[in-house]
Length: 304
Ligand code: XMP
Image (cartoon, rainbow, N blue to C red; front, side, top):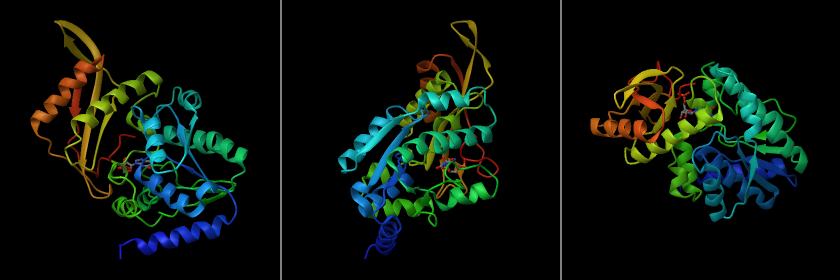
């Protein structure tokens, strides 16, 4: 029998016994955790589960449309909630990493998600919180977006005891497509977590382009996770013989099993070279690219 068969059956029953004839909401980001919870709960509740994708303006290129169409193909309707303005106005002038995380959590849970939930009178919320999220928040390392939420509804977290590699196995056994069970981790605060300094639509656009280039160039690297970070400081560069005081992008690429510890992937130099060329020629204003060579710890995987 498949390794997680019993786990899956138990979780489906537990969701059914908890929600009974009520209505539940799942906020899908397209990552393996929220995707796994969405399909588990859809199996348990069918059309009493409402699935939404909150477009916070901080997602990767074409991500909202892509996630919705992937789930449509497996028979789960997903509604996109456009909340870009709310997130950008709340993030104005905010630079501190934990302030950013807290604000994104508050706009999501207290405003956007709560309004939706109240409107449809859902008493239950399904969440893809995993063990590493809980441990890192409790240890005071980072506030993970979905941990320790104070809420006037019941939160159901079927994956609380699992780590990323185990969630992937559950997703595989649930029959999710490979592009989901193999999907690289992506953080709750989304691209805002990859911007040092203020998060503005313009700065998100730069890191979104850099991410698209990086994900394309490194897709065959077999690394656990790779990401582009926009630095706050500008650096002096040179273009066509003239001074160009421009932007710096940091590239990180990690080998890891479950994100608790990680080491930088020893990428071949020509791959790094190709990245530097594309990032400095395809993104206006970028004059410098650096590769992070620090393991976790003392680094963390993300920059904020
Ligand atoms: P760090 O940066 O803490 O990241 O070494 C460990 C893993 O968790 C992801 N990450 C998050 N995932 N919500 C999430 O769902 C978050 O707020 C969050 N912050 C970091 C990160 O991408 C890495 O895989």
